[in-house]
Image (cartoon, rainbow, N blue to C red; front, side, top):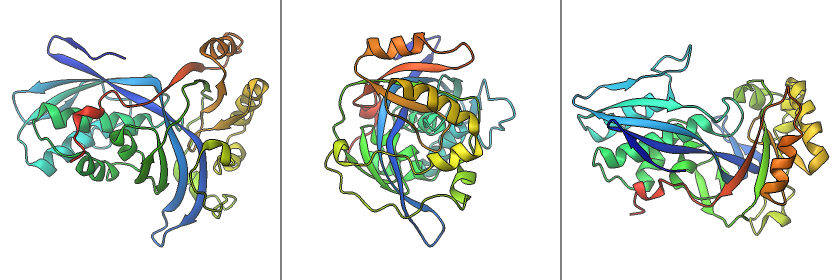
Length: 286
């Protein structure tokens, strides 16, 4: 992934993530669920184009259909940073979407994180990573991870994370064409909410399952069809609250061969793991 510049527009990556496992370990008094997971960055990415404006307006040039600017995460991220910092600067935004929406890959959260990281630099704010992560949590539980910018063992509601080494590997990710409602998953009475806590030593020591998967399959049978097809090639599971499913492959060549056998009516990606967010240096650790 490269950062390109054209006609004053600058292009920045917003990478996706996989949940290598996802356990629901409890619930807070305010109703938020407590989780444990490992978040893995992958090289499937959206591209966020930004251009500084001579005024203080935040303008989105290719908004998603039926998504008002007030609810678009990139616009909300820019306005949140503008309000917090008091800066009187603006930005033009354009988003090239490649990460499937509603797939559990964190696309919207990653887009928001990229906006916060980039505007921290373009607006000359020099806010610390900690401050940006606290701001990001106001936008969504996954946003702080993308600002943290390294593969992590994640706890709490997604705000507590520790860097973890994960192996360099390839994955096949399939995208069933259904949009899964995360709130609907967490409200479902069938959801397991008491998985025992684990201490993170290594992925081999963990029952790498997704507690949300059974509920999602019950709500969306098409996910089960994709999962069954992918399971021919290795252990497969859902990421996040779905709908995407994935399996790890021994090599990029193996991942490419699985994709080559994909039925015409299915959508999938051959991707690689990423050790660090390309924009991590846009915020300091102090």
